[in-house]
Structure formats: C-alpha cells, structure tokens
Length: 267
Figure (cartoon, rainbow, N blue to C red):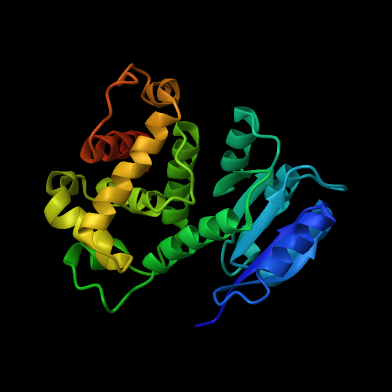
C-alpha cells in the first residue's frame, strides 16, 4: 500500500524540519513538499494534490485563510484533508478555518505523536469511504458507494466543527468512531435504535476492532467533553439547555442529538 502524502505550509522552519524528520521513516505517511509562504503553498498543493495539508495561519505573501480561499479544488483529482495548525485558537479563528474547508484545527504547540494520530484518524475515515471486501453488512455496503467524497467531506467538516466546539480532540480513539456513528445515523436514523446490534458492530468491522471497544471509546470521547467543562458550548449548539455539568448523555443520546442537528441543517 502506498504511503499517504503530506505537504506542510508553515514559515516556522524549525517546526517544519521537526515534522519532516518525524515522518522520515514512517510506514504510512510521507512529507512530499514544504512551503514557507501561502502563495507557494497554493502552487504546491494544486500541483501535487497531497492526501493531507498541514497549514499555518500566519505566513508571508498569503495567510492560511487566503490559501483555503484560493485553492481550486475543481482542478484537482481529489480534495486534500487540510489540518490547520496555529497558536491563534480563539473561536473566531477556528470557526473560520472550518468554514473555509479545514477538516480540523490543531492548536500549537503539539506533540508529533498527537499530529500523527490526528492524521491517522482522518486516513482511517477516508479508507472507510471506499469499498471494502470485508464489509458484508448490507447497510455498510449501501452507505459507502465509491465515490462518495463530496457529500462525506461536507458532513465530516460539520461534525469536526461540533467536536472542536464541545472539546473532543481528534487524537483520542473515540473520535473517528463517534464521527462514523453520527454519519451512519444521519444516513439511516433508525440505526440509533439498534446501537448494540448494528451500529457498534458496523463501526467495529470498518475499523478492524470489537464492538465493545467502539462503545467504550465513544463513551470516553463524550466524557472528555464533559470533563473539559464545555457544557455551555454543547447547549449553544442545540439552542437550548439540554444538559447540565452533572448530566452526561448516553452514547445513543449524544449521537442522536448531533445526527438530528445535521439532518435539520440538510446534511
């Protein structure tokens, strides 16, 4: 299997060198090019069409938001997964990045393993969008006909935006599981009534793990959000005071709430 390709766009040469060195001998990912300003970043991304772009906000010539605006995705054979990296972590910056097409916002400073786990989570999600012979479940086969990337990308962005707001980081195991659960519930709302028998097993099969591990990882992701104390953000998303700090939703309740919001927004 060929390695997933990465382009880094950041004017911090020390950070770029550190990331490149970290991925030098990686079995799954490789840094194919780097840029120190936004204009070069646009040219490199459109020329090489990498799987992932690690994009800084503050750069010479053109900032990261300008890069997201200028990229001509129609001229590219595939749309890269863009991970924004910055110390500017105010909600306005995060929301703008997601709105312009970034899949995730990674706050600086971060560890190399955190970065790799974040990229790996998105890579696993992309693999799940392609047909897999191991999937015999009728729902899974129907849900992921290839290519399904444009629709899935838009939904992924919306879900990532919510996860950022409520404090669920991309590097924890429950992140991709919870994201897949919401996407499945959006496509087939009745799945929410068969979490144990259908939802968890389908996700487990897709990620080569067990249903019990999927359930525990999703539970942990929800607990992380509650432990971070961002209950007000959760309630703001739904427009009402759904929960208090002492009231944690079940896995099914949390999945259903976000899936319902996606459906209301026309996901």
